[in-house]
Length: 221
Image 1 (cartoon, rainbow, N blue to C red):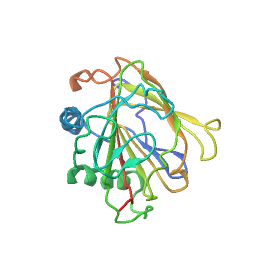
Image 2 (tube, rainbow, N blue to C red; image 1 turned 90 degrees about the horizontal axis):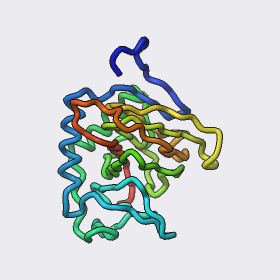
Image 3 (tube, helix red, strand yellow; image 1 turned 45 degrees about the horizontal axis):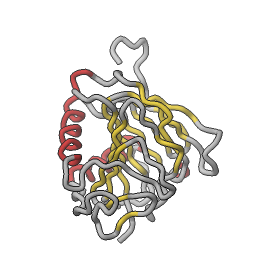
Image 4 (cartoon, one colour; image 1 turned 90 degrees about the vertical axis):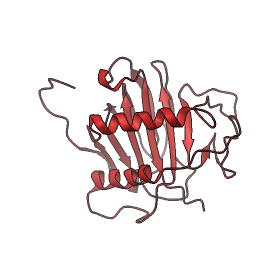
């Protein structure tokens, strides 16, 4: 945000959970947004996600590599709860961005799953009324860190504990270009998005709403 008194700095939110503000510059944000728009087009494009209990997630989603639907992955690699088309592949450059992000968050120290390739991306689109309840990313077998990239509107990201959806938790403001990585002791922590702040994204990006790109190592064979 222009005109801030103090620049935002890298912060350790919990053991293994690191927030790196402004990690993606304007050019890389624009490139990633263009890719997200291409992935969101049919076939196997952006879809509304329905839970087994009949609920509807307010954030819409598109998957790369493997298709996630509440709550397993579809091993047939098709959008089984969408149009049934084959899921778009995970691009090598995006997998490389995941490894780069882990290094930016953790430095040179080894992380869980060394050498593992990021092979799954879940891309969620939030409009101003969208939310994401507290949940864990628990369907992967790999313990490699989850990489989260933000584009567009700012959100309140609630990062909790590994035992329950309740307190203790910490609210972190994620803005366009921010990186959040969680692994190690925090890999199975509950987290969610209780609020999106409409109209807060960079005007030059040309995005109304928020995109969250989460990269994962499945370890699913």
